[in-house]
Length: 325
Image (cartoon, rainbow, N blue to C red; front, top):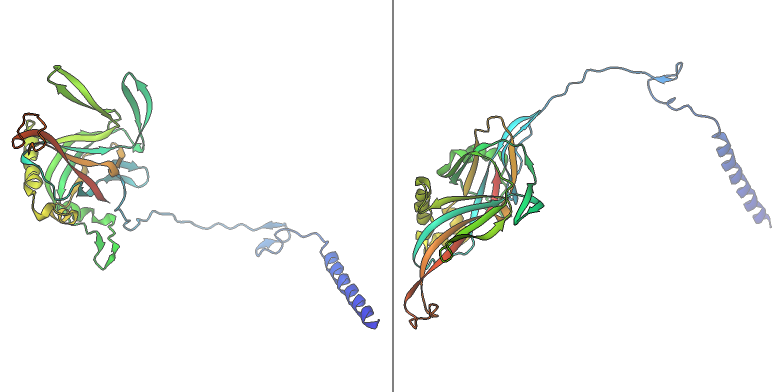
């Protein structure tokens, strides 16, 4: 019985202490009264002025490789000034160890790089597009060179890790650029739909083969074209077609060492902005050839399976391993 009394007494004491503590906190507190530097007489926090120095500081190089989108052009920031954006891209054979057929003749070479765009209207048979991720309305000179700087796929210090490249390589890449492949003065990306046509000799009229979204599409080589285009036919014939059966086209590793890609360079922006992002995931170089094959299936239905028949063929090279500069 005495134990029960002692427990009851202890509970009463604890409850009393709790009530006492709660009662002691009923007084009003002044906000800021415990802050160092507070003016107790005037009930305010003292102010003090300091000199502040602000400045811009250049950051170090940043990683610029392995992006499916690359900026191309020139952009002027109101604070940091103008920057010209070019890039280097490795290339990959869509088909390794290719067979170009009998007596292949290269007719044309076309580079295609889509822009990011959105359809906004439709007129007659034409789709109206708006370019995404484009800044400015100016123009610049565009050059495409053969790249001679070797881009390693793996880190030389640890071959299990992919190689990383940084923006401070621009001068090195420029100093090792090779032959000029294409040049366009006052280049400006177009938002227009690209229409592919051909001339139908039977109907004596031009027919539409395909309609493509806005893109950089240039015929850099053409057998019946300008002096520069004819020179590019010779260049790509020696570079690709004549290499059939060699180790240079046997695998993409060999090919990337043999032909180290393209260098896109921007110049003469003249203070006008025009910066666009390129969709390099779907970028290609297409070689259009006239070839002959042995008609083993008697496609011309003449009963002869040993004669040669002419065909048009396309060999595709893809962009890959991009490196901004």
